[in-house]
Amino acid sequence: FNFTLFTAMVGITNVGIVAAVKSPHVQDAAYQYGLVALSATVPLFGAAAVYAATTGSLSMIELMQGTLPAVPLIAKALLVIGVVGEGMAPFYAAKAEMFRAPGAPYVIMCSLSSLLIFLRVAEVVMLG
Image (cartoon, rainbow, N blue to C red):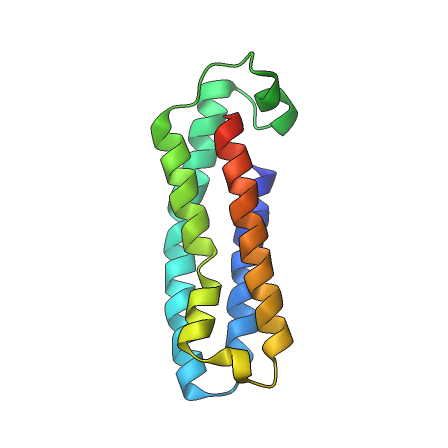
């Protein structure tokens, strides 16, 4: 559950980073990304609920031990869909051509945070 909260927080932060540029084109991209991130929270937290209902625990340590029942494939799919929706900020930043804007280092941080979340979700899906 902490992972899902962290992923949602990174998605909200990425919306703020993308929206910080005062260009109407960038604001439009931030709005579209915000809608995608908002709709991605439903499968993200749905997956966390299925993980908790199946295993009785959301602890990564408990999931790594392998003594818990197997997590259904739908929970893994929902988790991946939710993380992909939350981590789409680099695509909207590229759409708005923000990599050449004055705040480009922040956009690069946005891209790196999304990449790190994608790596972490691969670990979570393989453990579960």
